[in-house]
Image 1 (cartoon, helix red, strand yellow):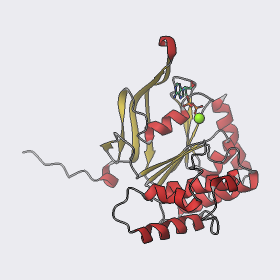
Image 2 (image 1 turned 90 degrees about the vertical axis):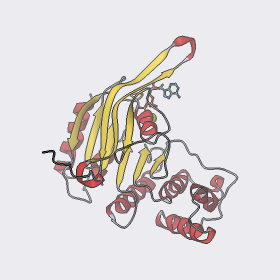
Image 3 (image 1 turned 135 degrees about the vertical axis):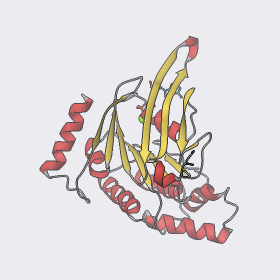
Image 4 (image 1 turned 180 degrees about the horizontal axis):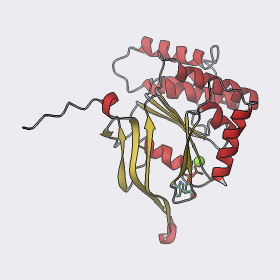
Length: 265
Ligand SMILES: Nc1ncnc2c1ncn2[C@@H]1O[C@H](COP(=O)(O)OP(=O)(O)O)[C@@H](O)[C@H]1O
Ligand SMILES: [Mg+2]
């Protein structure tokens, strides 16, 4: 007798919300030169986790986030979002890249509204309200009608964050989001992101943080993946089991920082 299998449901069977399975990515340069970034890398992002990715400069961290966002297609292997192949970008997966990408001729509010331009279900009024709510959440109330040139770098990051979150993505991918931001702004942005992620009523469910700042990664992440130089493989995976909010001055904190440094060198 054949016993039929239970239907698969995402949360029951799939441990990962986003998965890169055996991906190969290379860039073709001029004169036939090829940069092999990944040759068979597999990485999973779990439901509701805060995942950190560290690795040497040029190993392919930014490329990996672009692959996870559906912006770069691997030549071999595939990306799965909730078990389904991801072939193009989706509002469910938001990517905050390192370079500022705000439109200088639009106001702060208009820049955030752009993220909702394809949404046919919300009325203009609902969109405006939601954008204002997210700008408020990142601490930019009162700056709705400012232009990017009138903002500090930290404030521009906040606009980008609001723009990434306003579509209420399931997965938030961030590429060195706090580098080149003054230290106090970086502290408040980290708190902001952590508390949003901790709050169950708010998106996103899972966050992937690429960073070269090991302390930042230990402060925020449940799990850290250390990549090797190109073509990048997983050198090590580490669970960070410290209570939140994490205290940077504690001995346990620095044991993790030292461990990751050792794994990277
Ligand atoms: N668009 C591109 N065209 C050609 N080469 C690229 C491109 N983007 C990245 N690379 C190369 O791919 C490798 C990985 O880059 P990247 O993903 O930016 O690494 P990381 O973010 O870890 O510093 C580097 O050698 C880089 O020079
Ligand atoms: Mg990079």
